[in-house]
Image (cartoon, rainbow, N blue to C red; front, side, top):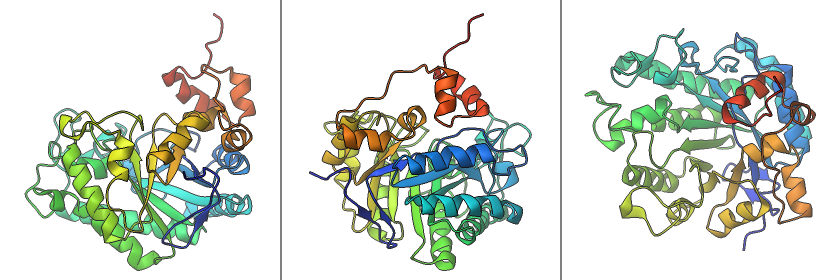
Length: 357
């Protein structure tokens, strides 16, 4: 049985002191122009001091038209480097792996953007990217990774899940292209592979590199995701794959893959030196341990980390620890480093107590 508090070393040479990684949580705490805010800095640093082995920022856009939320941080301009460098330095001083998540919202971008995707999309009004635009997007991901490395971060995660742009390219329903970025799974996955290759070439093998993927829904096919994860793991260019499962312990919707939990499905693949992280319903010490027992190398903690900045420390003291049930009082969340803009966003998920009329 893998101990939740045993260190985990990645192929890049970086080590997490335990098996808890803060999930990249949308929080809308940054400034309107993409500048990283003090509120977001404080929220993340509090989780580092709370015992997480790795802390990851919310998804940040790599191109201006890739912005998917108001109050979202950007990684596309050199002027963003200084506040990010301060965060990276303080996270590492708190003995945590310092990571960022890079993404482009694609068809899910806010209305003010030039909404683009792999193909024309009637539902969103998005237009198909030209081949040159796809190549520019790939370059933007690589350049943003370089910015994060200059700022002192240990690594980056590419967001290829949740029906954002890289995920849209993987979808056989959304990607109807006829150029080298469309058609077969290999072609549809080529933007992801080219970004990985570019980051490895410019940032080196000592830079931690992960990829978040969805296994189903999102107009994806589970069999293709299993095939892609299998290939990426043995290719050895990633430190880890982050499977965003929504529920680590459910079976796949696809009947062909039922009989195992989603965690067991991906943990059973030949992984080489690639680590497997899983996210979805990790809200108790027991759930975190169960995910490791089913073969994951580490867990991503989301809602539990919002409720308790020191969730790992609490689990260490009590392996059966369970977070309180939401909704939470605004004052409670403020004491956990959750700012008013983040609380406003969390209202969408019934996470904050309603005030009396």
